[in-house]
Image (tube, rainbow, N blue to C red; front, side):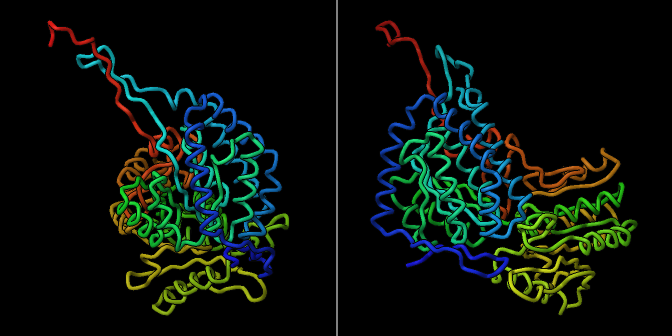
Amino acid sequence: MAGFRTEDPTTGEIVRTWDAMSEEQVEDALAAAQDAFTTWRSTDPVRRAEVLRRTADLLAQHADELADIAAEEMGKPLAQGVGEAQLCSQIFRYYADNAQQLLADDALPAHGANSTRVEKEPLGVLLGVMPWNYPYYQLARFIAPNLLLGNTLLLKPASICAASALRLEELLTEAGLPEGVYQTLLVGSDRIDGIIADPRVQGVSLTGSEGAGASVAAAAGQHLKKAVLELGGSDPFIVLGGDLDAVAATAAKARLSNAGQACNSPKRMIVLDEHYDEFVEKLTAAFKDATVGDPREEGTQVGPMSSTSAREDLMELVDDAVSHGAQVRTGGHARAGAGAFMEPTVLTGVTREMRAWSEELFGPVAVVHRAADVDEAVALANESDFGLSGSVWSDDLELAEATARRLDVGMAFVNEHGTTQAGLPFGGVGRSGFGRELGPYGVDEFVNKRLVRVADPVTSASA
């Protein structure tokens, strides 16, 4: 039965299909991962780092090819796909270059012994459940730190992203990763709970929707397995002042990147009353000027959404807002013709009775709110069940930083938004999930922090 397929969102053409794995194939993968863990965990960390470094080289070398795959699978413009591949290269290289420091024991005060330290040991077989919107980057965040630790990995990609996941597995193998250490599982979501329940699986990391996160967390909790969840976001973008031309241009670029399909995209623009009209005008102009088209054509800034069903879900939120009185400053419609294209859309006048007030707008739609003062801006920003990231924009850095520190988020930025680097932790609070990826924090999740104390031998005099 075909469970995975590449359906080009630009044309609607089904390019390729893959059969879902049988129960026997999944069992073979689990057995191989468990067997590989025995040797991979004892492999010299220097050797593990070498594999990561070669993977980084291969990702950079094949960036154009990887971008082509992403454009065909989920509509990412080529330049953005190349950038994603390069970011993944940087992630693998970060963990390779910093392996010794990241895996070093933590020396503690002796507390009466000769020595006391905490060692970092791998847990075993881990399951990753990943989405389609960043088909390489989401995987790299999970793969690189856990391979460095010595864990072995099973990766279930999104049903529309088999090609990118399988190609990444090929590059890892080409880099010298031993058989069984990393495997792609082409299985449906209905089989995830059973894999989590398997006693060989020690933890699960999911990036996806709130519903998927709740399901995985429930299964992990039932079987006492460690879980890391990176879920949705409705990030606030608070404008207190500054160069409004530059701020609005930055807001538009950040919101429309990846066709707005990013958990940490700035979805709610909250602007002080004195700047509101000017900012809305400039943001609307930037949305109107954005080039929408085939992601494989040079100059395209906004490609199609990942699928027509994703576009339909987004349009339901837009239509609901408009029916309750929201104003469409530009866009507001699905584009006619082939493909899953959506007009870049700016909404104002969104109120609490509208779904767009509280639900995540996962596509090229921005909502702009007016705030009377900083306190109201912070209150609006925090009036969300999500807590991924948020940003504050102003020439007054002292005020901006103080405001950013009031945001109930996992990542707070001043005069930038959504900055992602290999050495920076990524994660949120509330309904945006829990746990952290990347940076030194990426090796602190699926790890046994084993306390080791060495005391003097017991003698008859001390017994």
